[in-house]
Amino acid sequence: MKYYLLFITNFLSITFLFSQTKDTNIKHIKQLKSNYSQYKTREEKKEFDEYFETLEHNISLGYTKNEYVSDTDYLQFIQNIFTTIISKNSSYKINSPKYYITKSNIPNASSLGFDFYTIESGILSFLENEFQVAAVICHEIAHNQLNHTKKSIEQDAEFVKDFKREIKSLKRKDFLKLIKSQDEVIRKKYDLAEQSRKNEISADSLGFILYANLGYPKNQYLELLINLEKYNNADKIVLDDTIYKHLYDLPNQKFDDKLIKLEKNLLFDGLTFKEYFNEDSIRTHPNLEDRLKWIKKNFADDFLKQEVKASVEFEKIKKKEINQYYENYFQNDQFSVTLYLLMLEKQNLSTRIDLDKNIATVFDKLYTAKKELKFNKYVPQVDPNSENENYQKLLTFLWNLKTDELKNIADYYTKKQLIKVAFCLII
Image (cartoon, one colour):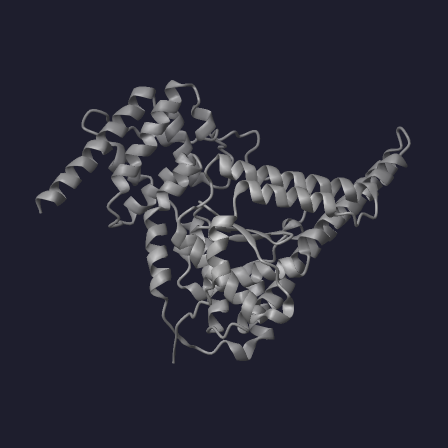
């Protein structure tokens, strides 16, 4: 049986696209802050006040920095998914959402609590169909319905209160008590992280129930997590050193292997600064492998193989987002990361036609930054002892290039792109 997504569209969902503005949402947050009065302690009031102020600041900043997608196709697509979920789960009394689609290549979404959501546009290029997008949104609605943000703020307030009490009870030079107090702080932090991991599992559970009520192929909830696990493992793909010479050994500028040589700081070699904490204990999300096992165990009968076909609407938006891929990185001034990915595509013999243009853009931006003494704003300092040696080599290369060498590479790839375009026009 083939499944096609049936969107429930009404006048309200269309009107939403034009009613959600910076002013209306900031006004709504201020109203939330003034109306909220369920405080148990002064610490809790302070935590909630800071939360609403941060939410207001971040949303306002997103508008200022043009971080939000305004394309009507994107907004209508996501709004239709929300509308369908709310309609098919009426017993859960889900409120109308206030959401932002951010220009980002990370396949992620977040519940900010109080019916606010962010959806990173990367989910539209990375995922395979609208069912998987609906699964992501169901998961985030589950967080919202379970009041995880509110509970997290309350737990943080309790942590602050306990910490103050411990510090206040310390006597000067009472080192034994100080150590005991620090141990207590660490234990409480672990407790908060453990609660966060439990929140993810509970959101998976309710999220799947919300998703199942839509009548969509249930195996796509599982496929979503499998795809996210693939994304998490993508950083294991590394650049071969030979790609540098292939790309940057130019007719008027020869490449030298010394440009990518990492000089390790032997004083700190071998130290990871992780010896004194349990890394897994302070992870807020359980790893995807554990979540996959949990869902398979608890919903085993629901994951039969079903034939799935993405809608025309989804394919249209996915194509748009793929074409926008590198623009998203430029939007966020992530030039070194962009270059790393461009070089990976070159190494893998990608057929994407805008690679040379984007390489030229990166080096032109870095050339300008170098001239204006803003290079360190866009290219992180090299950490020779970092575990990600591959990326550190790229940073070493960029820092070793002189201003005119950055310009030469930018000019070379600009000309190369122009020649490619002209050749295509002739054909």
